[in-house]
Length: 282
Image (tube, rainbow, N blue to C red):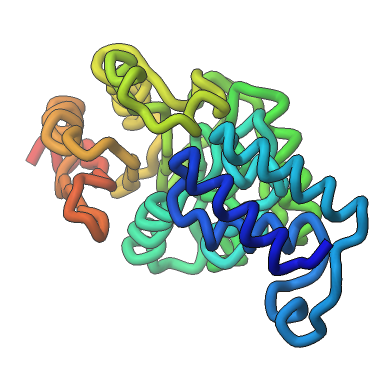
């Protein structure tokens, strides 16, 4: 089968079901189905084998059904890292890179103990370890299936991170210089308005009670007992949750509370510093 025709048909199939950037995604599916880059196809030309054509058709069918591309290819790039992903974990998103950048910008010391709560594929923990090899990074998740994916990614990337199964920080020992979390924050009432791809992702990693704030509020209440003096907390949040989380952090005894926006101008990262006892008394 002519590769150009196959690519065109796949792009039209995706466009017909409302897949954004259908032409670009068709190229990704072509590369996945054939093991050859688009550049290679342009330069070398050629035809798809029967097996390649069938694989591309199957990939196109799944993506047209709005299954996330990352679940089809089994890969997702995040902060320059090539991560394996499965339906056991959320697909790492570019917006979450703002969370990683906030941590890297705020923590300058070479020796830091940092915990990533709700690690999923390990994206945040591995990005931090990749950028700061001297840090002691711990990744926490309640799902053993998610931890298996994270562990696989760490092994393949040769990034030593400690993985722990825990309900938030319940089973994690010691104190940390920073607590980082991308916990579920979507209001369940909004599920009917969500993009179709979210139906394929683990629902417990997306939606949380109390307008999406329940788990983050619980973590904030626990964080003070697990942070070193002057330790910091960094939370990814929904587009309208910055003010509510700021109030929660203030009530819990945090200071220097900041809300950072993403490139679209939406609330994305809320951070704060834990007050030492001396500061509180002063």
